[in-house]
Length: 411
Image (tube, rainbow, N blue to C red; front, side, top):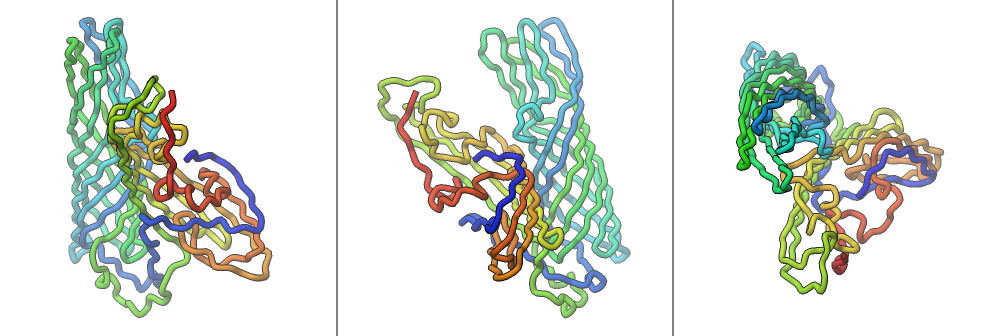
């Protein structure tokens, strides 16, 4: 499903989306008087983050003559984190956290370096970067400021393409150190949001290919990211005055989540002819895995913002060629051995009501629950799928849950 940047105005319509079978129920926090809320930062938590990463590398290629170069790389990143906190009676927080981040789906963003000579053409890419850190912070009610540091690592791949065309590949793990700082705000008993900066020095590595080509590199990586954490376990003890939580639900924001794993395959079949763009007649089994968050917030009366970050990985049958109507819509946006990040949707929506009869909009991944006028004008701007709005097909609209047709192989 293609996404486009578009500005859309639609009259007298409801822009709704039903939650899929794999969609988690929306998370609606209790509302509280901020002065009556005392947050307990102790305990375990899990979360996700997204932001921008940038690195610098220095490389040397010898085959046998040595050449060197430096390169700056980077782009959007996203990933997951988990950790645990302990707060002393004086308000000092001690914590540990591990995280992993993945590059953007744009291939060039993950290229650490590329060097070529008459005998070799070497490209180094990172598949993921991660850290295992300690945290030291100061708690002030719902606010936490902290410094952090510890071990950094990255998984990188090296590909050499000599003139013969026979690729030589190697995978390496790199290790170094990381330091940074951040600020975090608990906006509900279970939930907190953060802004964090990390600097990682990932050391050096040396690779020797079967052809005799030698490659060495060093690189660092910086990231600035926003994160969302959910505390694990009972949070009843985090409230000093439960009676002051005066409203059962919040109509300001919702969080949905979804994970989808699709496996497809077939046995060997006879094909009278086959070409590079045909569905191969050889038996195969391929799978894709995608993970999505839908973060929806009401900004003002009639104004809403929607953010849908995704991590996708896997491969389609025959690299998504050879079928007239491809049987997996998920495979068309994935072609990665490790997860890659993509902003699938990021848009704002303004609804102008004309009064009169109202209707109730159901909560969904791209729809905040609430009452709206039946007669209304909706203006939407940003990145989203056109089929979110215009496609009313109830049987084959969502590639993650709906029927997808198969078609014979074509050349």
